Image (cartoon, rainbow, N blue to C red; front, side, top):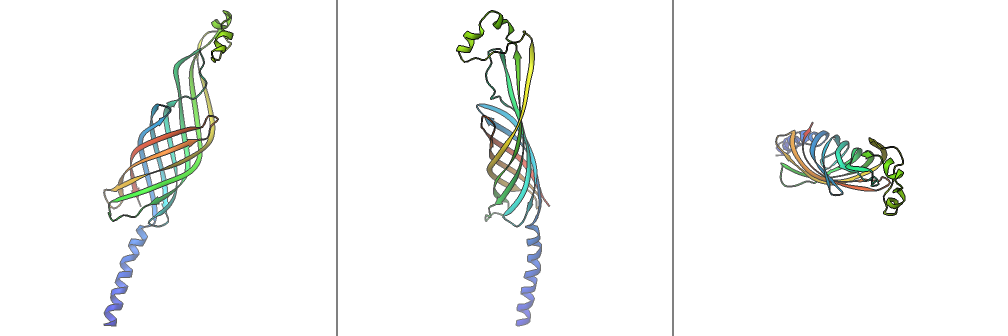
Length: 209
């Protein structure tokens, strides 16, 4: 009887080893979605890699690009409506996967911080004519800035780097042992001179090694 009990425990231990091994390893993911900020919607793309320490905890890095956000630069009376901004965000994240009774659905929470590069672009129609007509003080009185140069269209572009924070979560639907479809939502906080909060909603695919 003791021999059978010992054999059963040994088999259980051997079967548990692959399961424990699968709990660790790399996870790569890529996603596409939409980002919303200040009433503007932009396409968003992202990707990253994480290392799962165990079944619940992982650490990783992620790179996101938000292609066409609304610009938060000052409004010039000389400028057209073609004002927009783009952001590339690099963060280090902590990923926590929440155990469930379903072997296929894996909810998760992600949070972290890093840096963001924000580029703002403004299509300018210069204000030289208004200045020559003496209208600049009047327009300034209405809170509109002036650009005292000769007329002529141009593209003004500025790039700033700031701290970025991210927090969000979602769920993975396992299609196979290694491949899963992901759906998630994140909030990005960009600590620029004019702090910006961006909501990002995305669908993607992930692969567990």
